[in-house]
Structure formats: structure tokens, C-alpha cells
Length: 322
Ligand SMILES: C[S@@+](CC[C@H](N)C(=O)[O-])C[C@H]1O[C@@H](n2cnc3c(N)ncnc32)[C@H](O)[C@@H]1O
Image 1 (tube, rainbow, N blue to C red):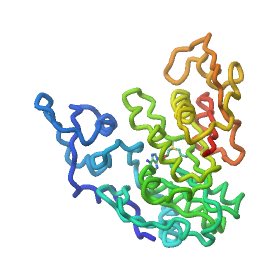
Image 2 (cartoon, rainbow, N blue to C red; image 1 turned 90 degrees about the horizontal axis):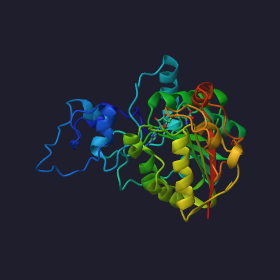
Image 3 (tube, rainbow, N blue to C red; image 1 turned 120 degrees about the horizontal axis):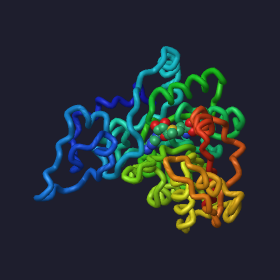
């Protein structure tokens, strides 16, 4: 178990890899490939001093799907972190960045639980921990691992775990693809949940999206045969990307293939409206469908509530590992 939240400043001393993006903003800079050789024609831009500490993608081969947000915790969250970290936080040895994992680290996730033999649900990007806290309360017979980089979110979950007296929750503060590659072993996961993954809705930022074909391969490795991958998003273009990734993967089947198509599809509905920074397409019909009913085990988080209030539709997908 570890002792302190991942400290972005811990990354400052690591070797910086510059991007070649010219003068774009932080998100743009982060979205650039990080291991590009400088061309003789394009001078390589040096990272702004101090920015590398905030932007872990300077140290990674793939752009990361998150930006480090404010790490300030409330007094209650700080107290919960101090009281609960030794019990709940699974320690990981770091590589270059403060949310990275050392590639040859040996981490025993089931062994961190009181009952290692119980089925494991992993929630990636747990935010404030609402879904994990709810599900862990409803299912004391299962183990839950929340993976998140945002320290106050993990501390909020720790508060809930303490106040509800939950014994079946552990948390890991790390970049999700590295958790799947290094910390989780093949077949260890019974259910993998990713609810409202950051949509990176601008086209030039799509490369930062977490759910990609490569991520599906990682998911297929850690989910046991017959296990479940649940996804939800409020952004239709990302929903279509997720549906396509599941359809193309030979290792998952869409449990609701063909369901909720045509006028029953949330995609048809949303495309016909002027929303999500798009013009309305009044004749659009989603012939494909494949959307799951709302997962009953997914509590309404504050993030989803805001999306609904803004008039967005929610897309659920359920995939089974073959
Ligand atoms: C839009 S929020 C949704 C939070 C929560 N699932 C909910 O429904 O309220 C996405 C969360 O994913 C986290 N996240 C994004 N990329 C991540 C990554 N590569 N590893 C771990 N967490 C990540 C972010 O820090 C953020 O808290």
C-alpha cells in the first residue's frame, strides 16, 4: 500500500520528449505523438517549462486519455485519504510519470482483498467513485477495484467506503492501459466497467480516447472467457466508435446486437436533433442498433445527471468475452 497521492511534480525530473505541434494549447500538445523523431524541416518544439509535470503524455508512447485536474482535496477527503489509504490503496511502483506503472512490476490485485477468490469488477475512470460505492454496497459478495488518476475522486470514494463500512473495495491510482497491461493478469477480471470515458469530442483529439482497438485487446486479455465489458457514454460519436470496436473484435460479442435500431435507437434520436455541436440530420436512421438497456447496476452519477440535464442521450453497450 502506498502513502501519498500521485504527485504531478514527481514527473518534473523525468526526461521530457517534445512534441512537434508548434504553438497549440496544452490539450493539443498532449495529443501529439510523443516519440516522433525531429524532421529536418520541422523544428521540434520544446515543452514549456513546468508543463511536462502536468502532462504525463510527455513520457509515454501513447497519448493519455486524461488531463491532470486540480488535486485540491476537501478537509474531509484529506482525512479519509489519511485514514483509509493503507487499507484501500494498492501500491504500484512508478515508471517515468506519477500515474505510470513500472513495466516489470509484480502486483497481486486479488491478494489485496480480504477474499481474493471472489469475482472481481474493475471500474476504470471511477471519477468520484459513485458507481463503485453503490455496486459494492449492493454486492458484498464481489470484489471491486476502482482505477482513477484523480486524487480527490479516489479520496471521495475512500470516504464512502469508510462511512458505509465496505470491505470489498480497493483503489489504484494509475493510467488505465498500464493497469491492464501490467497490474492485472490474464483472466482476472469478471466485469470491466467504463462509464462516461472522457469523449475528447474534437476530431483532432480523438486519438486521446481511451476506448480503441488496442484497448479492446487489453480488455480481452484481462476479462475471463464469459466475462463482461460494460460501457456507457453520453457522446454519440464515441458511442459509435465503441460499438464498432466491439463488432470488429473477434474476442467480444455484443450481447444486444441488432437491438434498439431504427426509431428505437438513441442514436437516431440524437442525430435528428441539433445537439453535440452538430447540425440536425432529420432523415438519419441508425439501422444497426446494438445498444444495451440501461445497466441496472449503474447508479446515476453526478456526471450522468449533468449530461441528461443538457439533453444528451446515454448509450449503453454490453460485450461478452468469448
Ligand atoms: C468523465 S469522468 C467520468 C467519471 C465517472 N465514471 C462517472 O460516470 O461519473 C472520466 C474519468 O476518467 C478518468 N480517466 C480518464 N482517463 C483515465 C486513464 N487513462 N486512467 C485512469 N483514469 C482515467 C478521469 O480522471 C475522470 O475522472
